Image (tube, rainbow, N blue to C red; front, side, top):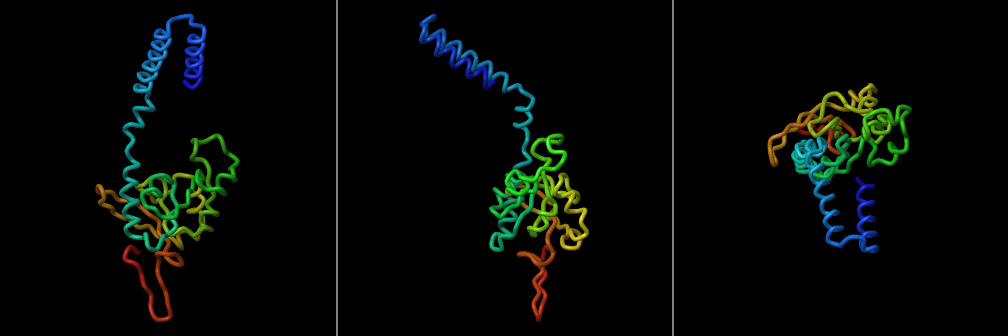
Length: 205
């Protein structure tokens, strides 16, 4: 479509310069091509799928919930859905797929180029070294088991289940939605707080 559009534009310009046909015919042909493109796009299976894809709005519920609960502490949020969740939460975020992370983006796995586009990168050791406070695998609904490389590598390490515990959060704005989150239990921004005289355990733990 890009090439056809460029050729069409060049063709209209050439016709106008040569005056081979009246200008209205040239512009009519260009308009006809645009109509054909519009009709084709309207019936394209990927376009229809995109119009029905609404899971990102569940990310709005999760993001608003996390922002309301933790904005003051600004915990590090590790996610696979690194668009809607960081956007709606406003929290510092770590993209476990590497599309928005320099380290992961520059460390290609041996199988790079053979799996799902945009979902084959990851580095579990690096993500754990960043000590995220909240981890959401897969989409906004989260999952107890990961869907991609970073998560697979993280959960394979014994320290993950020692340091993180599963928590289900429920949001209501703008609709009811639950998410499965792995929360860091201690030594983070929102976990258990210890001092010489007391231990404070947050309600979600």
